Length: 463
Image 1: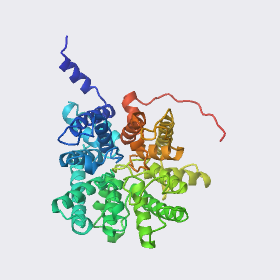
Image 2 (image 1 turned 135 degrees about the vertical axis):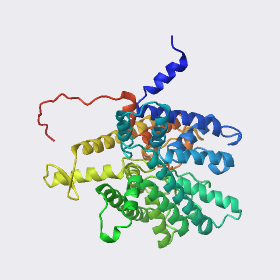
Image 3 (image 1 turned 60 degrees about the horizontal axis):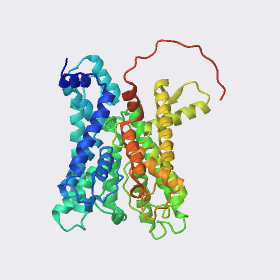
């Protein structure tokens, strides 16, 4: 009869990459919760539940919080939180797959191909060098942003160490698209500070476009004068990213300009431009805010626009969530090809495979279903946990909060901290599922299944 240790070894060796990713994420969350709830890391007001919610929000780089990070966490707790953000931001899947090569004794071609398919970023040659390059790039970008914020950004902080830590923490949070801040008002105090807006916004964009795009641009740095064109993926990501930033900024400027008693009424034109551009950048993925967010301060049209931006999210291989900019671009390309009467989807003179289109449709549809299901679950029973007990939230508030959680954005309109534990549990599950990914989670549940070789007859269905 085998010992429990041998049985554990067999069970571990039998795990697929998606299953190993989910299990590893759960172990990191459990360990982080126990550490963050200790007196060394937090005050007495932070119990296991508050620590669990904060850890899940950090490891999924969401940014939603039911505690005041700057006040209720000690310096050690903030360091732990920053480490969790880096762990989740650099890619929970990348880290667990990297560790799997050590804990599972399989190095065959099938397992290497399995890892490559699961990550969509690393090929058969292994992820070691790529993972190291991701780390080095991230630390360089974060370090540069920290220096700029320290010298020209957070100059209102007199204590040099506090200014340095604040600069570093916010750069870590921005590059990893987490949205955690050390101030109670997030970045509202710096809404008219061009350096803070520029540095945080740039870090968010760089972290959100994905490693593949950065690698592609860096590899062609010497050929720019020769007009060497980057890959279709890079062009789609960059054009979609900047298009969404522009559309989001113009849309928010338009919707909030005519909102009575809105947050824009007292701002100058320059401040309005800064706020709308920054908010357009951070809404899709990061969760920082330079204006107070609530159902009273923003118009319903503005909140709906932000919900759509959150749903699209960042880019593949980046540190943000959402259905990804490439999925959105492929759906637009499919729509355009249908209207033009084409039988194939063609983008920039390149034909897109039906497999990619099916994946984009599946991710979009499954994500929409998950967000609506979360919103439905928040509507079961009294979800408000604050005073008065009879307080209730509108549909738009619930939808905004659920979209923010599932797409790992972290923007809050004052709902999260007021939810009872049932509502907060819904958000925690949504954050974890949104960060892991619908397809990877389904693969973890159902395991590896070989593709069917059975062919079926075709039949027409009218649309």
